[in-house]
Length: 88
Image 1 (tube, rainbow, N blue to C red):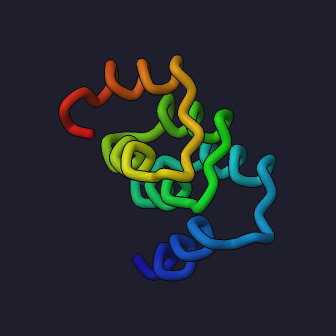
Image 2: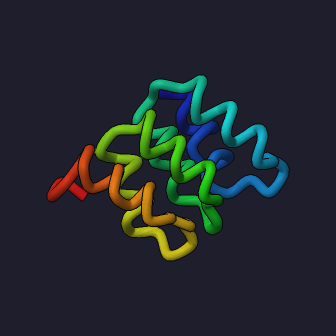
């Protein structure tokens, strides 16, 4: 997808996007690759991780689970495992 060629690196790496922007994008998009890009950011806040866990698919779950910069609290970890289990 041509849009994702531009969007994915921006979502994953842009320092211009603020927390509010990231949360809005996570809620507004239904594209698994975009959720995964957000979950792969160098730093993922607890609210963003929780939103991606609720709205994202297995791609986002894998990105969060493998990201040392993702701040996953106990509740989010539990939801992540319940939703995606061994797939992550």
